[in-house]
Image 1: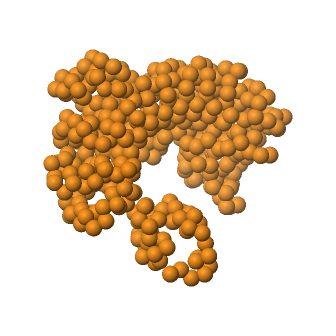
Image 2 (image 1 turned 90 degrees about the vertical axis):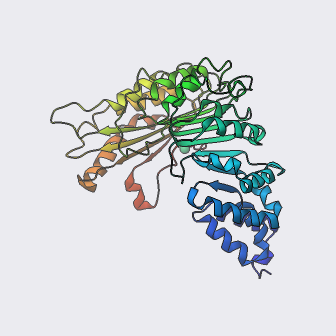
Image 3 (image 1 turned 60 degrees about the horizontal axis):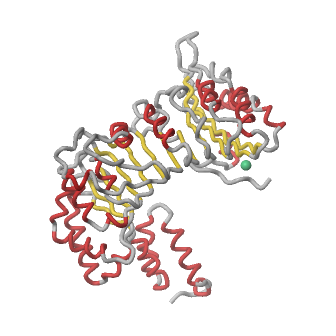
Length: 436
Ligand SMILES: [Zn+2]
């Protein structure tokens, strides 16, 4: 039994403690320990311990399934806690494995069967699905056809388009380094390509996945109806350095012009830590996105150029995109994150059209309340802390015009703020309206 003061806490507060532990790093180990520490914690901990079923590592997966089966034979109710299933590309063989099948039928009978599917390489060993038709057919016949709301696809070269048609309730789609090799889908049975209700996701995030995004926008003729409907998309996140995928952004923007509320060009490339800046003017036009509330962008300014060579006009390019936002707009949040790369000097960075950028922000605000975030950081520090500090100060000083606009709530951050214990703002999130 618990001793005071823990024994004096309500069940709600004990459950809150467990939720907090579940959201910290090393949660599985900590939840296991907490669950054993006192019976008062055990039930709430089990809810999180069994929340995810990951079948990624092919070497250990058979043994892991046998152990799990033993646990579930003893306590079948634990299956009711599973909400997320993670399957590796090469795990199609599982669909004929009796242990896996019996565990999955327990999940199917849960009052709330899993609704999130992570499919891809993850901790597996292969970038390819052995038998994509089998995988799609199996998923389509599983409980996922009724329950799937979140589909996260990662690191796979031959993702089949019909995977999006598994469930019409799909709400969130994440594509990370996923491609497709199939062009015609003639080998796919009819029932996987047509006659199925198209999902209408509210959230889409993609990077390094242009071949699949291309098929999502314009499916091959084998698909008689759209693979996804764009009519409910509210949040779109794209990698601004994904040169091959950016041309597909505007067709999506045109399709979601009445529903899109948040656009984040902030997703960074996992494979190249310092990606080349892509100029967005001509690729992104926000003039028709009538309900856009939040717009965020990540950009790099590379000052490592040959002597006298001009620095890429990155801020001017951002201003051109901002310039497409009409005066009558619903924007409440603008967020800019700038990575400055300077080897010999920061020349060309301070000369960028910062004044023009703050001018655009004032124009977009048009007298209404606006939360503005500007994060700047130097990712090469050969030039010393003082020079960096001067650069941050120089850029900040260019925002002087904002002082005449109290309706614009300005949040500026640079790495010198660490000294005061203040970290940068979370990327890809809208900050709430400040009370001041
Ligand atoms: Zn604020």
